[in-house]
Structures are given as C-alpha cells and as structure tokens.
Length: 333
Ligand SMILES: Cc1cc2nc3c(=O)[nH]c(=O)nc-3n(C[C@H](O)[C@H](O)[C@H](O)COP(=O)(O)OP(=O)(O)OC[C@H]3O[C@@H](n4cnc5c(N)ncnc54)[C@H](O)[C@@H]3O)c2cc1C
Ligand code: SF4
Image (cartoon, rainbow, N blue to C red; front, side):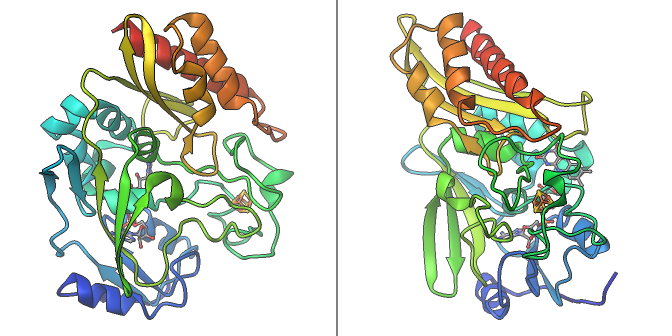
C-alpha cells in the first residue's frame, strides 16, 4: 500500500478547499474524501486508488436525518447506511430504500458505510480491481478485457464499446425510484443534482462516473414528500442469499386507485452501467390495470434496449422476471 497523508479537516470549507487542489474527482484523484472507507480503503489496498491525501469527513456535521418543512426527508452524507435503513420515517414512508440498503453488503459494512460513499461506490468488475490487467475505467485507453472475457455479472443496459461495468449499488436503485436529489457543495458554491443526472454513462470516458469535480463534497440527499398509500418493494436476485451483489434487482414505487396504476416509478439494479431508472416501464404501467399482462409488458419495455455480452444474456429474462415478480408482490399487499 502506498504512503498517503491522512487529514481531518475542521469544517466543510477546509475539506472542500483541500479537495479542490485535486486534478480530478474521478478515477486517479490525488485527494479523496473518506466516509466509511469500505470502498476507498479497499481499493487503496489493491492500488486501484492511490490518493496522496485522504480527507476524513466523519467529524463534519453531516450525520443527521431531518424532516423538511415540505414533508420530505433530508439525509446527511455521513449518515450510516444502517441508521438510514432503520430510521422509522424511512421504514414507514420510503420502505423501498430501507429494504434496498438492508439487502446490501453485511451488517458490519452497513454500520460503517455512509450515504455519500454509497453513491460513489465503484464497480466490482474484476479487471477494474486487478492492476495487472488493462481497463479503460482505471487506465484510459488501455482497453476493456471484460468485453471478450468474464462478463457474467456486468451490464446489459447503458454499456459502450469502451466499458460494460455494472453500477453495484442497491441503495442507488431505490433512490432512483424515489426521485432523490443529491446536494453538493463545491469551490463555486452549492448545487442540487436530480438523481438521474448524477451518474454518467461510460460512453468513451468510462473513467468519468459522475458529474462531480475537484472539491465537490456531497453534503446531503433529499427525498420528496412521501406518496401517501404508495406500494413499495425492492427485490434483489443474486448468486447467494446474503453478502452478495445483485445479478438483477428492481425497485418499484406504485400508486393504485380502483385497480388502475396511477403512478409508477421503476428502477433496476445489477443490469445498468448506472442505477437504471426505466421510464419505458413506468409508461407501460401508468393508466393500466394492475395485472400480470401489464407487469410483463412493463418488463419487456424495461429490457427492450438490453445488449447482452457473451456470458450475461441470462440477465435479460432474469431482469424481466425480477421486475414482474416485484410488481406482482407489491400490488398483492
Ligand atoms: C465485501 C463488500 C460487500 C459489499 N456488498 C454490497 C452490496 O451487496 N450492495 C451494495 O450496494 N454495496 C455493497 N458494498 C459496497 C458498500 O455499500 C460501499 O462500499 C459503501 O456504501 C461505501 O460507503 P463508504 O462510506 O464506506 O465509502 P468510502 O469508501 O468512504 O468512499 C467511497 C467513495 O466516495 C467518496 N466520498 C465519500 N463520501 C463523500 C462525500 N460526502 N462527498 C464526496 N465524495 C465522497 C470517496 O472519496 C470515495 O471515492 C459492499 C462492500 C464490500 C466491501
Ligand atoms: S468493463 Fe469497464 S471496468 Fe471492466 S474492464 Fe472494461 S473498462 Fe474496465
């Protein structure tokens, strides 16, 4: 493991000023914030991340979950994943988020992991994590061995000829379906980023994963006012029952009146190069009767653009079944 300087900034302004000196906030950043460290330190041990300075942000006052005057929820960036999942308001009004977090990682990791860090967790693509291999995400222009190699767990939506890595987060899938907003404070001030605009598709710059620039500190995430009476479910399918990333997952948030679906928010995990909100599935559901035929049509719509690789074609049907089953289960309750 390389030598680095470990700093505890006294406040957000000091943290932002220090991080703003980094050349990039993307792969290869020489200054990194640290939340729980469960992604960052892991990747530093593998020499995939080699920052010269690590800024521990755990003493900043970003660890509160607060009700907002508009009825929404404000979640600080250093709130632990466990604290968020077990918060009574989250369990009651945003249960899809609680379910998604609790199906991720292990209890120990969730106790350490922060909301900000989870938003920025990195792909589990084996070539990305192995510095003896080429990888366009880690070393721009070096190639993508996954396309002709081991790609069983990788993406079928949003990939490019330069990268097919999956975004592995469960929490992010729920946040996409809940239409969260990410709040960032940077060297030029504050901004609010709609969840769908935060992560980037790989295109020909797979090393750029989000819209963040040097010095941008995620301060909090907000959730809109809860939808009264909405039916919410997170369904995760994986190779083993716990402590495993999703092969496919689905977050559904539905409003039903008189047997008809009046509002649908759908996101998929394990299949996209970013947390995958499916407006096609939402359109296929909205205004329709909540029945098996409608659910299957929505699943077909969600996967219409899927592009399988040599080992992961099975994900297309698995994702359709996952979404259909999630819709069936959510509406049966
Ligand atoms: C064995 C294992 C199994 C796992 N299984 C799952 C799983 O099944 N599902 C799942 O979803 N996840 C899983 N994870 C991933 C885990 O959820 C993430 O590692 C965790 O959420 C990252 O949070 P952190 O606070 O530890 O991030 P850190 O490691 O502290 O940070 C991650 C990145 O975010 C940046 N960062 C952190 N906070 C901020 C901020 N406020 N502003 C700007 N940048 C910031 C850091 O600089 C770093 O680049 C697993 C992890 C491990 C190690
Ligand atoms: S899929 Fe992306 S992360 Fe994996 S080897 Fe290819 S470029 Fe690297």
